[in-house]
Length: 114
Ligand code: FES
Image 1 (spheres, rainbow, N blue to C red):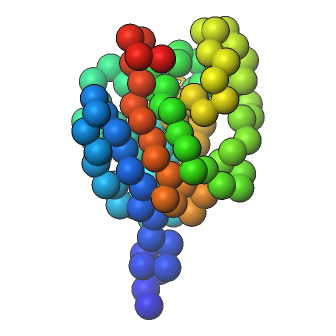
Image 2 (cartoon, rainbow, N blue to C red):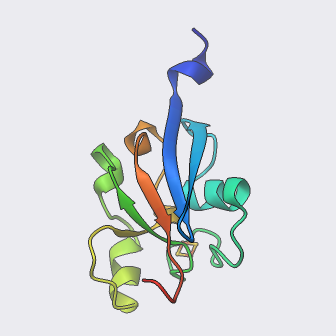
């Protein structure tokens, strides 16, 4: 078995009610925001480039495991700054592409449906 198959990651993205099955592998992208911009083509997503400060990369995620469940660095401060209290809402730029997101459901949020 080659390395890519061993590290295979699959999860569901929901954008405007449409489900998209996304395939990736460990560390294919720097973080989930970059993956979503590349594979789902979302406009005006991730404006600070992944610094965890702009909250334009919001997702509602269920099914995360392990380290991906932890909010670290700027994430808790930024979510609080924007008044976001729901635990499942995350900054996608702070979620790494690892097996911890395998099987997750990732809903893209914008300012109108937070
Ligand atoms: S890209 Fe700015 S907070 Fe995620």
